Image 1: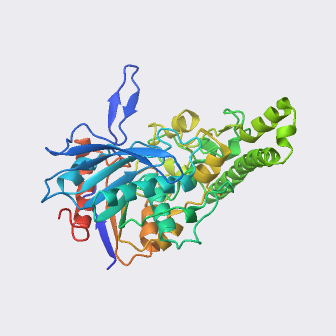
Image 2: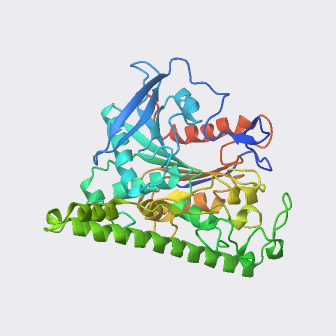
Image 3: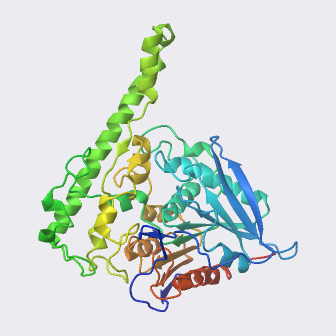
Amino acid sequence: MPQFIGRHTIFHGFGRGTNETPNGHQSYTWWGSDGFDLPEGTRQTNVRLQAEDGAHSSGILYTCGDETTSPKTAVVFNHPRADFSSHYLTPFLVEAGYAVYGGQTRYLGNDVNCEHECLCADLAAQIRYLKAEGFDHVLLCGNSGGGPLSTFYMAQANTPVGERLDTTAAGEPYDLNELDLPQADGLINLAGALSEGALGLANLDPSVTDEDDPLSCDPSLDMFNPDNGYRQPPESSSYSEEFLTRYRAAQVERCQRIDARAKQEIARKRKYRAMMAEPGFADLPLDEQNHITRMAVASNTLVIYRTMADPALTDLSIHPNQRSILGLMQPDPQIANWSIPGFVQMMTAEGWLSTWSGLSTHVNMHEDAKKVTQPVLSLTLSADVTILPFVGEGLFENVASADKTYVEIDTDHFAFKPNEPRDAGIPEVAEAIADWLKPRFPAGK
């Protein structure tokens, strides 16, 4: 039966772990904590996998116990580009009796050419490996960008062969009907985005007037312009409905412009690939063959400036939760938007359309959830500055499964608490997941 579990203990504000660097700036710990060790006797197996399309990925399998107590359920962590091989929840889930597979996809550390359709082959290879290792149940835990990726995979795996996607978002052939996509046994969404494209669109700065000039700015569309309602933090900004309507429309228009550039780039390569396939290509002079070949394969990198400009970052009345005014990568949202790194700065045309274009991506957690019939746990971290409550709530509302649970926990995006100790939220998140797993997926034999 569907369950809706209310908030855990409420902490107001926003927590994030910081370390002072020599220059006085703060560095941030994303996916791990120094305070939690693996249980004694934990085995760590380095895994190298090859997908059906030939690409390689890797990960670490964590298990604990002997032949009589070894885990029969494995939880898989994945993200399009982040290293989840040592995810912060691993020690707790292993302690609870579960195996954990921490994944590293083919796009580890750089999503410049990331195509989500291809990532389905990586997740399929992981599930096949774990099933071959004897695990009865394999669940996907999608954290942050891994949430929409895991939901997308499950939707495609649940779609009958012949009805799956057969091209990438760029329109290039990549037929998921030809791949073995084993079904996962359940889905845990941990502060997952609606999609990276939707997140990118919500944060795309529409005041950019020249894609080749990072300083170009239309003041009437600048969310950091006091005339538009911006206030210096920690005071909350207050944007009018008229401004927000113009702002969101202009974000769509900018995304359309970038999409058009990407599609023009793809059309050029496609044109010259067709010329290479013509019967007389090999008879052309070598310098002409070289020119055609280069035009068919060379990529003009798309540079996307200012990609952390969601008005919800500074106006706390938009999709209210327990967050404070902070940027995800940098404490000051304005500095986060105008500096590096942002969400996406450089992409191939194919990677942009598949991953970061909110208008062209095939990924949408709420739509994909309509094909997910397996048990689902959706976790919202209610002090999150980036993944706002409507995302996790929408997954819960749209998922096809009759066994679905929604939980809110008052931590930030990294499961940190605003009060000391900062790591107090991590065991709380782990407990919520373990409590959900135990009645559904026994840990051991």
